[in-house]
Amino acid sequence: MTFNFNARDIEPASDLSRRLGLSFSNLALLTRALTHRSYVNEHPEAVEDNERLEFLGDAVLDFIVGAWVYHRFPELPEGNLTKMRSALVRNEQLAKFARKLDLGRALRLGRGEASSGGHDRDNLLGSTFEALVGALFLDSGLGAVDAFVNPILDEARGPVLDEISDSKSQLQEYVQSHKLGTIHYRVVGTSGPDHAVTFEMVVEIAGEIKGSGKGTNKSYAEHAAAHDALNNLGVL
Image (tube, rainbow, N blue to C red):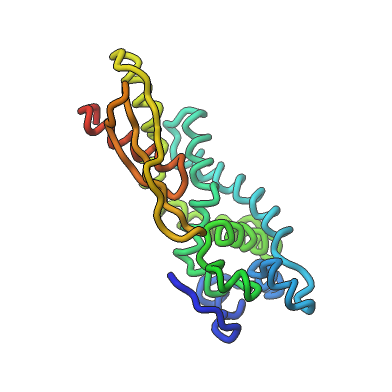
């Protein structure tokens, strides 16, 4: 989604609260959750940005997601539970949640940050989602956060389960057990704007390209390339 910054176009906290079905008794908390430090720098009356709420929301999300994973996947061992939680609370995933909620159009940014694409930047969206959780926790308690976050996690369940299958480890084990040689991952290109770069990666085994993949950071591109290699090798 592309935003052209105009202060009159920013969705007010009251409208966002109604749209998301969140009954904030203190809308100032929600407004603060949507306020980036660049906005405060240009609007002294704003007083406080969302960084403290982001800190709180990060801690609350760790607990909520940990409990959700524990109850939803009783068959998973501890190591996989940890992977699942980590995949769900990483910034890129939180940014996906923020986009589904369309938080970008409610985010209050300074003009420079807004004009450079801040309303759709992963790090800002992920942080804003955390701040929203922190604000909801302070306003309405843990139960309200649980009711808000759990449906979002349920929707992400399938894709994240696929991801934690850890194609890189699976490829490493296969290559070692069949003595196929050394694995090497190599970036072959990038695309997209600076704030949303997509990496193109290949994986070589004994000097031969066996798979390729793309991702919004090098790690995800490597996993995609490893998954492609496993398909090409007939493992999957």
